[in-house]
Length: 599
Image (cartoon, rainbow, N blue to C red; front, side):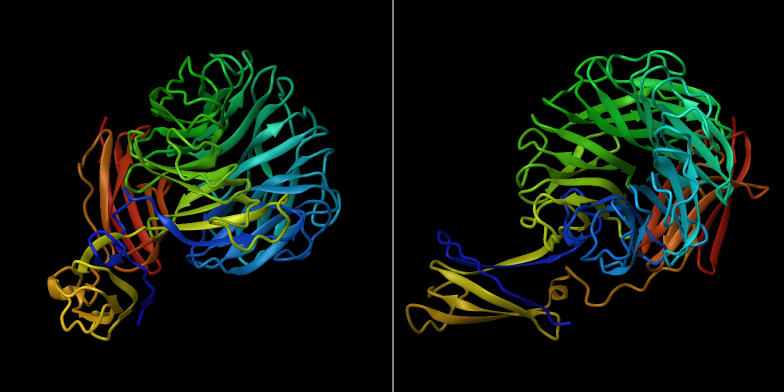
């Protein structure tokens, strides 16, 4: 396809006409990415995105809430509704749904389920519309949707006081695990320790409570993130002000509170992390080595916390499988910086999203007020790159994931309609859901400077049918690359050969390799092994580890992957000695290997 680029390049000192073609490389992640596309979604009354996931068709599902009754929003029920938006891979709206009743209904977490539908968790105080079974005040509100967004079932969970679900994920048995906070001690809730407790609820595939646990002490305790671990248990992150009950080791104020649960909800271990200030953790993920990565914010500079930049900082903590600190990093500047979402990336590093008001320290490029701040870390916590996204208003990122192409999708909210933000629906006091797809900034595969001693300026470049290009502009030079000069300034046309003629870029793409999966190495192993496989074309891929009886013990990948070779580390920590199967599946393709854990 022919490409037309407008160039306005001037070098007044050297008088050179510069032509630089940039070709993307998916391995160049040391360079901060650029925005591939962004979407402001909503209406004129205020809209927020809290959670985003990639779907099996390569698109995205986002959840949050909306007060709007116009713009992209339809079917508003009253006051605040949970708002679910299905996007194409390019950010176009496939469908959107307003869920709720006449009261306040918010969605905080969404993920695609094994049947292709979606599970949503949030809160509701409605007693009408889509909502039934409210126990009083706000309840956990869990909604199962079909692939097209129709409600299959909904459940209000809680008691007579405040119950608020923040995180949900599907479990390997087809059910769901939910985490949040509860101030209740009646209805569905038992065992409250006083004030807010972290409340963990295990549901069947149909939304029936299997078990529930109130975790905490006599002060406020809140769970914000939960995920199932490879051993079938659960890891929970949030914060606690308590010094009694289930909580030990508080450093003062709010601490990160990390709790490892068994498959039935018993506490295996718990850790209070922080210093004398406030330390709150809204996001946790299990890492490829069997440990955990936690993200949040901290105002401390003592205890477990060091490296303060001033004000609130992102606080990133890497834990072992037993909850011991491997390393910790404070990231930010002298103003407010708060991390809300973290995940491990396929290169073994981490991607973090949140909001920053800073203009110095680790932060660059702030657009004004709060920006969405994205940070890519190495496996040891060093900054690879950071990027401020937004405009002159308040911009916040609340959820980030790595996408099938190896880059990232971010969801949050924005008040802006300038800078990086386009298409805002409301006035500046109201936010839109803001979805940003990041991609490779590109690396220079070849460049060529043309011209000589005076001004030489290019105004356009067009690709030609032979994959070369033709450059047009004007020149004042009479030497160097310029011949046949007629007057003080001439039009100057240059035809460049295709880049593959220099051996830099092949004209035809390589023939894709077939599906392949190599034997894991080392094997047998006691700690960590690596599974290597080849994907021939962009595909939705699932990689899991099962017992010989077919019980899944780990789900390593379930996402769109680009063509290429992948090396996935797997930790056997927590597994008994024996033989396990690792399964790679995509459509009709299924490959199986055997690994042996020795103790």
